[in-house]
Length: 525
Image (tube, rainbow, N blue to C red; front, side, top):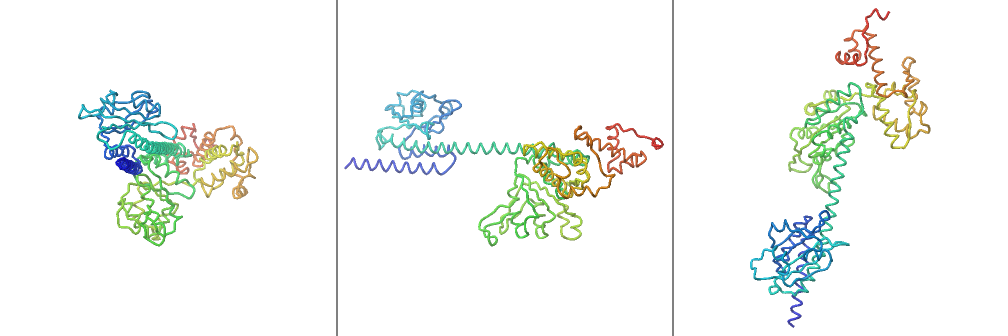
């Protein structure tokens, strides 16, 4: 009867211990915290006063003490085991449990534990912690046999089960850690690639006006200043916004784009500021807005000129305070965001028409960048064409190039869709081309037919374009235009500079650069 009672008691102890340990192992992803809790449970339910969990480090090829109970802290930091060394190393190497009736037989362990009564000598059980197909560590426990309610065999069985649970937890934790590290590395790599992609070195343009824009971006990127980017659709406003973000101290933070035109008025406020559960019909859960998602980074408000007046007041408050409440909520949320806005609208006209608030305009207009339409920076067209040809040829494993006649037409075409239209045109040419050199007949209809509208004197010939670099071609065009302007203005530099839309200083620089000789009016006779 006593034996049955003892077996029942041991079984209850076993179940309680396993249950409590299962709970702590599944309660947190913090491995050290959960395994320290395992040590405390073994102390509470099995009177384990001294114990260790060691894990194998593949880099050092040693077992180190990960968590412990009753071990001197300095010993815990210093003590490691090689496979086969001491009982711990032997259990790891063989993958089999070991039992020592008297721990004094193991001097290393005897000196390691903080025994308060050195006359007592506990027994020691050490079992392997196994992963799916290999030993990854050990679980060791010291007991005073006369003080525990279970036999060594029963204690061994319980520790083997606990070690199995620990093995699963350690492997899961290692998998989570590896995945987390992989995600961190991927994120770092992506951020690095984005920084390179949106580096100003990769924003194509060598015209004087684009150089001035790049200089502004260089100056404004390191700051937190609000930026308003203006220009026609397709001029590259988002590209400049991303260049500012990825060349700023916020580059590691999020870049959140909001297309203000694409969202109906009823959804825009919820999209920007978020909403609480039940804020309106269909709000079945709490949702963060774009401002919250952009915390620590940049929010890009594209086509801000189309935001309804009803939302403009709340947006103005956010720009001023960097604080807001979700739709249907009363809790004030603070965010640390940089704001970049863009528009193709005439905001000054919108203010006169009372469709855009003047105070919001002035709040946005801290730094203004105006992107010119492509027709006003035609010197960049050959460079852009070459850039897009290289990109789409690489993507499609082709070697397509354009004829001199096509280049001539593209330089005269007004490109109402700006750089985006040019990009799409080159992509189409590369994809649809059957020959290596594409001609006028391969161009989209609206560009192909535009040629017929050009007067003869407007036809620019590029007979030798294939023999020169695009940089040289652009320089030749610029030089020709400067000479023409000087001739028209009777070689008066100040008048020629006005005609060209540049400063006299900039004109002097180009005259010296191209070695243009200033003639006297009578020399033209």
